[in-house]
Image (cartoon, rainbow, N blue to C red):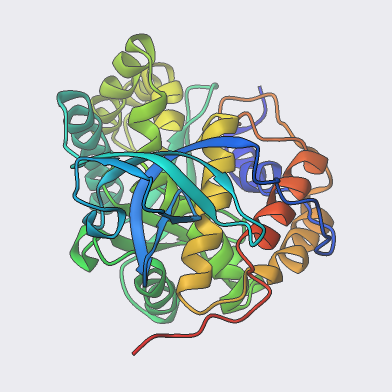
Length: 345
């Protein structure tokens, strides 16, 4: 198995594949039906943004759970059936919406995430169990200072208004590796090596992707009953770990490997693609430029190569580079991201 520290460093490179310059893939014609699901996250006039897409209604649109499309509260779960118009907006035929609740599974996953976070903060460093039974130090945790201030400022611009700033805890991890992650409990970790190499525009693209994993509850949504048990064990196994105690280190290593990766990464292709798609919307609404993506991914290509998958437990089922390029280019065109956002007063 690939060394865990290397896996963490390479994970983002594998998932955030190299992009080519923005092209002009075809927009769906109006007679092609589409289904999307996500959350009502932004509104602009009569348009509601769901799953990163612009959704509009007609007098014939059927809406359940709210009086009209524009009456849906931000943060509500939304499912839409419709077709694209020539501008790329999704014209809704059917809209189903409901409040976003918290079930028992989500509460358990958040509790496990809290325990893992608390253990790292207590020891003032992020560390991980390795297959060798030893603890691998990733880096010292920074709670304040220029790195943290910069990351928090970007995250605060990106977050949709229904997510309060108090729900997110942003910290930096002192390491030359390139990575970032968002846990189910709102803990966001950004590696200093990544920040040193990226502009604010590029950091926004990475953090918009990671923030979507949190807002769209990807950890909970992709877990089977079997993997849930592993996730629930990881908080306890990390809590048992004492840096100076080899026996406890082995317990954490063999009991927590898979659960730890599930708490922080290893998302399915479906959720990685959604994080790309919705992350672009966060970037655009915050006033950053989504078309800066190609330069960012070129940097990842130069550092980590063109691998699209790694054979270790940190790897999600990412789309292959050519598919990802096509998907992101399509989103840029569908949502007219080449035109700067005009802020409404």
